[in-house]
Structures are given as structure tokens and as C-alpha cells.
Length: 388
Image (tube, rainbow, N blue to C red; front, side, top):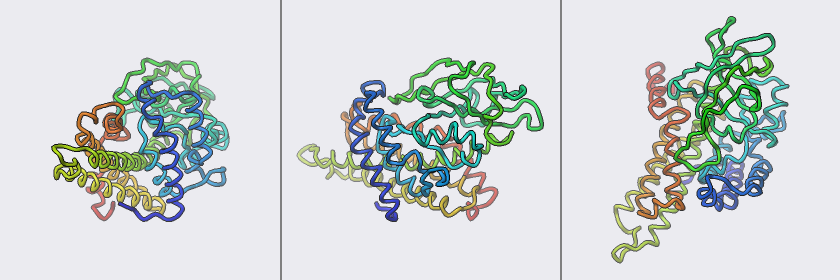
């Protein structure tokens, strides 16, 4: 099941695996039974350790004090953090490379570098009532002197309750770029931001996904990222990375499920025979191992393509391909693992039960599986198989 990694990637893999196994996984059941919450001192310890390990600086350029790790190294980290349920691995913020291209020096100092140091937390307000798989931006940004006035409604603003500022995407209403999108830094305590409701979801996370109303929210023009009209480009950069890292986490999900289901099957006796010796169980484990290996190969190869500087259009499609394959494969593995565990697999204290709830959304957010297929199909129509 190995994918060839050099010593640097292996070192980062081992750091993340140790953090996941010794710090995060032991807290999963407590989180599950307490609405996703951990004791404050434990949560702070996880945050501080993640920052000290350098996880918040992985994608930050060296000339800004970061580690500038290869994408292969970062995938190795997120694969191991993916072994953890209850979003306990979301204990740190992670500035992304594109932010250093989009932001002014002042924005980097005020928002991005404090994220790296663990001093600030962010969330993304992009999805809207009418959007989802469709790219729909009805939230508006109107220029008013040295400010913009933002009005609209955003859904599924993940981690808003932990954040102190937001990335907000809005459509410009006037000027030469009217009708195009812009992205803004918006401090959470800015007047005019209202939580409409905080719906409950299948998973048990401390990170909530509220619906927000922006009503006359005044944002300084200096808080706009890049030029007017560039907002969608930044969103695409974010989506590419998130899709790849979802695939990485899916590898971690599958590995842990296969390990735990195999161990259970070795010990469990049915009709005087070990469950592992039943051919139908062997078939489920075998199919799961194939799903994992194929996903790991795709994921790390896509990471290497990023590191090699391949064409961005090709990378965009490959990230769609690997996100599609990985999330569908992880869903199959979780279903098989739960079946192997039997009734025990339906208990919330069992990781198979938790993963079955948690990874279902991976087939939806950051672009549903059907949207990934459309992206891949359109690329084939335009450039053919050799152009991907």
C-alpha cells in the first residue's frame, strides 16, 4: 500500500501521524458525546501543538516566515490528519499560497500572518441560498467613497463561531467591473452581520455552519483582495487546493477504517470461525484496499503535478478527478466497514459510524461529485484526454 515518498515527506507524515494518534484520536469519543466540544485546556493544547509543529505555516512562502512545503509534503500531513473524526484536526488555521499573491502587505500583516502564528482564525462566506453546485453570487458590494457596502445572505459559513474574520465574496454593482465578483476581508464584529440561524448537521463538530445576513455592512476599500473583478479567480484557487486536501483526508479515512475493520474481523468469531476467514468479508476488505491504493496513487501524483508546475487548467481538472474518486471511494469503504462491524458499527463510539456521517458531505461540498464530472467532461470536450 506504499506510495514512494522521500525522507522529507516521510518526516512530515510521521509528525502528523503522531499528533493524530496521541493527541486527537483519544479525544474523539469525548467530543462525540459533548456536541463536538473538548475541554478548553485540551483544545488550547491541540491548537498550540499544531502551530508549534508548523502546520499553520506549511503553505506560507519562506520570505514571510513560512515553511513553503511542497504540496506532496502537505498532502502527507493531511492524509494523516484525515484519520481523525469530529473535525478535531481543524484546530489551526492554514494560510494558502494564493493569499500571498492576492493580498497587500498591510492585509498580510493584519490577517494572513496572524493566521500562521495562531493569533487569528478565518472562515469563508461564499455559498448563497441559490448557489451550491451552481456559481451564484447575489450578495452585492456597492462602492461608497473609501468603503464598500455589502448586502446579502450567505449559507454554510463553516467555522464562523470560531473565526474572528471572514473572506466574503460579493458581486460589484457599479463601475467598470459591475457584475463581476470581488472578495473582501470582513471582521466578524463589523456592524450589520447577523446570524439568521445555525442549523444542525449530521456530524458532531464544534465548528458550526450558520446562515448569515449582511445588511449594510461597511468594509474599507483597503480590505478588498486584489483588483476589482478578481474574486472568482481567488475562489477557484481555494477550490483547487481544498479538493486535493479533501482527497488526502479521504486516504486517511480509508486507511483507519480498513485497519480497524480488519482487526475486528481477526478477533470476531462467527459460527466457530474468525470473521476474517469469511470470503465475503475478505472481498469487502480487498475492495477497500484497492480503493485506498488507487486513491493514494492519484492523490500523490496530483500533488507532484502541482510541485512540477503543470498547467493550471490541467491541475484544476485533476483536482476534480481526484476529489471525485477519493470521496466516492471513502464512502464505499465506510459503508463496508460499518457492515463488517455489524451492530457495533452503528454505535457512535465506533469510528465507522462517525466517519459514515462525516464524510457524506465530502461528496457535496467544494463541488458535488456531479459537478466534478461536468468539469472533467468539459475538459475532455475542449482538450481531449492528453490535455488533462
